[in-house]
Length: 299
Length: 311
Image (cartoon, rainbow over all chains, first blue to last red; front, side, top):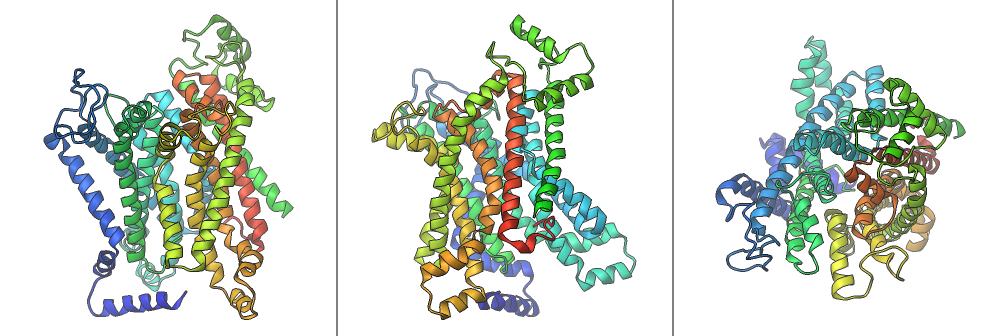
C-alpha cells in the first residue's frame, strides 16, 4: 500500500467522524472524476431517451419510404435514412431500448445469482465453500458464448431467453468477487457479535454482510453492463440475437456493414452510439471503483 | 508440479463430459434436430445418420454411440454439405483459424506488453495516459465495429489493402489479424501495466535501482517475470475469446476458418456440424485454460501448494 492510499483511508476515517456518510464521501470523490461524470451523464441521457422513445421518436421505426431510399444526414433526417428510407435516428433510438434493456436485465439476473451464491459460499466457508466455488470453476471452463449461440439456434431467437442466457454466464465473476469480499467481512468483529447474539444466519447475511459488499457489487454491476451489451450486439451482429423487425445496435451495425461502401453513415452512427455507451459505462465503472474503494488498484 | 498437471488434467475430463452432455441434450431437444429424423434432409444424409446413430434407439443409447464416435474423432456427416463429414470440415478450417489466431495473439502480446510496460514506468503522467486511453479505445471498440471501419478506411477509401480473403492476394491477412489482435492488445496493456506497477513498487526493485542498474535491465531481468503474471492468467480466457472473435472476423473478411463454419452452421441449423464444432471449440478452450493455469503456477511457485483457491 503506498502513502497516498493510506492517506485516502485515513481521510475516510476522518470524514466518517465528521458525519459524512460513506456514500456521501464516495459521491464527492466521484464528482471530481470528470471522465466518470461524463460517463454518468451520457448513460443517464441514453436511458432517458430510450425510455421516452415511443413518444419522442421523430418517425416510426418500421415506416418505409422506398422513394426516399438511403439519404445522407439532412435537416429532416438528422442521421440520414437506410436503404428502405427508414429514419436512422429513430431506429437507433428503438435499438437502444433493446440493447439497454438486455444490458440491465441480464446484469440484474447475474447480480441476483452471483451475490446470493458468493455470499452463501463465503459466509459458510469450509466444505460448502469448496463445493460452491468448484462449481463456479467448472462452469468457468465452459465455452459460454458458444452455448448461448447454441441456445439461440435450438430454441429460437427469443429475447427473454437471450438475457436469461447472458445473465446465467455473467454471474460467475460476480460470485467470485462477492465471495472474496464476504470472506474478509466474515472476519469482522461485528459478525462475531451477531453470531454470538444468536441471530439467524440468513438475517446476518441479509442485514450485515450483503450491505457491506454493496460498494463492490455496484462497481462490478456497472462494469458488467457494457460486457452484456457487447455480447448482445455481437450475437445480433452475427444474426443470432435480436431478430427484425426488432432492432438493436448490433443489428443496425450489421446492416451498416453490408452497405458501408455506398452509405457509410449507416455503419458510422450506430457504431458511434454503441462505442460511446461502452466507453461511458466503463469510465463510470472505473470512477465508481476509485470512489467507493480507493484502495483497489486499477488494473 | 507433475502432480498438479495431472490433477488439472483429471479435472478437465468432467468439464469436457459436461460440455458434450449439455450440447447433446440441447441438440436432442431441438425440433427437427439430427436425432429426431423429422427433417427434410437429403436421403443419403438420413441414411448415413441412421446407420451411425440408430435413430430408433432410445436417447441414452444414441448418447453413448455419439460419445464413442467422438473418442474416435468421428463427428458424423454434415447436414448441409452433403458427402462431407464434420471431421473433414473441422480439419479444413482449423489451420486457417489457428494461423489467424497466432498472428492476432502475437500482435496483442507485442503491442499490449510494450504499451503496458511503458505506461507503468511513469504512472499518472502523459506516458501513462496516452497508451491507456488507446487501450480503453480498444476495449470499447468491438471487433465488429473496428473490422468494418478498418476495411472502410484502409481497403475501400485508401485502397492500401484487400477488402477480404485469406491468402488470395498479398496483404489480405493484415487487416483480419490486426482487427482480432487489437482488442486483446488493449486488455493485455491494462493487465501488464497493473502487474508491473505492483512489482515495480517492491523492495527488490528498489535494491536493483540502488545498485545502479539501468531501467531496461531492471524491467527485462527482474520485473517482467512477476509483472506478466496477470497477463499469463489472462491468456487462457484470451485464447478462448480469440476463438469467438474469429466468428466475427472470419465472417467480416470471408475467411474459410472454423469460426465462419460455426456461424454458418448455426444459421443453416446444420446440427451435426454445430455439435462437432462446439465440442471441438470447448476442448480447445479447456486446453487453453489448463495451459494458462500450468504456466501461471510455473511462474509463481508460491501458488503450487494452494493452487485451487479462487481469486
